[in-house]
Length: 379
Image 1 (cartoon, rainbow, N blue to C red):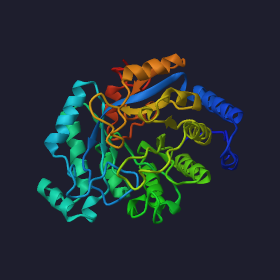
Image 2 (cartoon, helix red, strand yellow):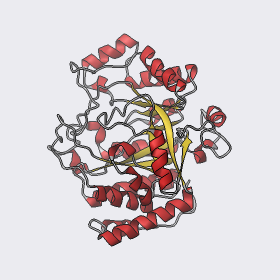
Image 3 (cartoon, rainbow, N blue to C red):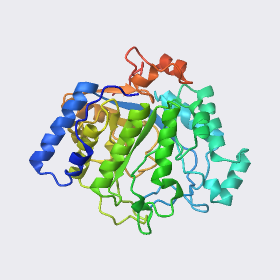
Image 4 (spheres, one colour):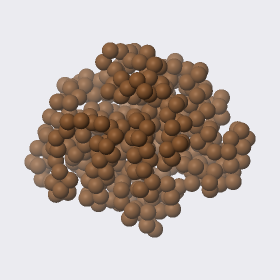
């Protein structure tokens, strides 16, 4: 459990910040930045990773997604074990320590082609394959898996816990309106907010270090955005399992149902980050992706303490049109604002000390005394 925590801003106060003045936004950012400094110091972390898109098929059809491919489309597939291992081995050579498994949710429940592809690999379910793919990486490389497999049952989480250092799933938003026709999550059974909250809660019961977050600009109201942050925080206060929250800005992509939607403004992103830092327990890391904003260094002033996973090898398969900034460039811009870039593992330092985690010994061996990565790559 998180322990001592004083409310920096109430939900009611946060809901009143839908249109702050420039002066109010600056004051909000100052409060958020000061809170971050008190709890995280003047360092900003990142995780050096490879991205392993185990399958691009999915039973959901989110209105903004280009990652998912339907059977018959180019790129609709499952990676083979050899392909998985090749990515992991190449990442290991480049100093990566995290293998991020990201995949569509349960495509076998929708597509016979997915069931056939799984059967060819010797499986009947995607989760069974994820477990073995993680074990393959653990047995043959020094990388530690982080699994983003969507909504999961307690039993599935427990199985994956044995072969991964951490897990994650974006909540995105608690609004059920987004599942209505014409909205971002229409025809997406796994995007039901209740199911996603149950997954985060179940991960808490198993003490799994968990990453979640919100996606802004997909049709939600400001109040729904605040409510989403509050819902995440409440789970963390019960279980202490949310190691990081991502605030990600929607980017319109050609060829999607939301390809012509307006993207959230830079000011909207800054406001949301600052409010997130003030709503969330300070022990929760606040992350924003640096490849989705040209002036990403401005996020530091809003209270972030992490840039997320960055790969020297693989693209951001969720936003393939947005290349990762070079780590040296991120380090330079971070330093320009008076902060030091450091490399962490897929599990944050305060979770590495939990000796009940199945991969505790492996993670301890990769960490230095302060819990950050023993071998630092920050240039």
